[in-house]
Image (cartoon, one colour):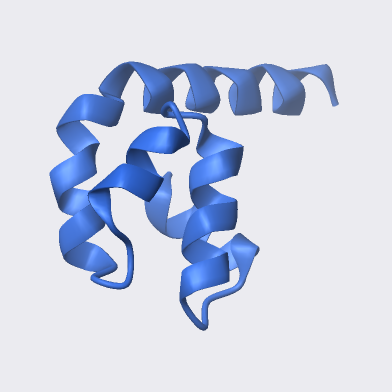
Length: 68
């Protein structure tokens, strides 16, 4: 169980560190998003997942799988 937590933390950290590079890809994948709303997430994986799920018909689980 601790390994799962460590893996999730690593994924969050890696996502945050790569957020600037991922932003154009995310915006292209989900055209329902606007750059300002995405930027307001600050690269927090959970916030990006929630935003995408809120603006699309996708579940949080599906969005998370696509982003990771």
